[in-house]
Image (cartoon, rainbow, N blue to C red; front, side, top):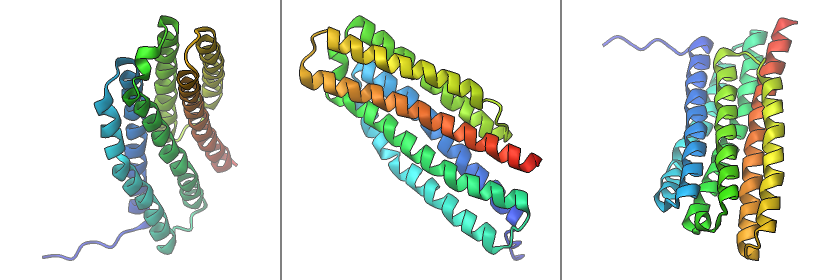
Length: 214
């Protein structure tokens, strides 16, 4: 049997991209599923997402390993080194975002959805949709290595911030028990942070494009 060809910096970068695509997909799927779970009271989804932690952790660790190997193979072209550095910075944003989606889904197990006013339900539904849109666009920016969506995501993030404020105000005005109000305030914060992470990713890609264009 012929020996396998030794890995090269180029194939290493392709492998890193593959792991990154996997992580982006996991975040988008988790956020959509978590919102549905919270609104429907589906306790099973939280367990499913928690079970994907291992997938996320493995992909996270694989990226670090592949970056180290690519550097060891003397991936010395400046554009390759910059790509590797940005990949290392983006991966923690993805890992943390998946954790935030898990936190939202766990609230379904608390029966939080049953405590929502119709307006609060609508606000959470909207936050979920805005968040999914933001993360899909962040994923596209990585796939295409195109950072022009950063400004658009910043505007979307402002909408998410406004929705967070309105949701907290709505919960306070509804006379919900303190424990429920605190949990919903956390949920609103989780969505807001998910928006921030998506913006961070797009800005990193944008900065990479600017550096490569110099």
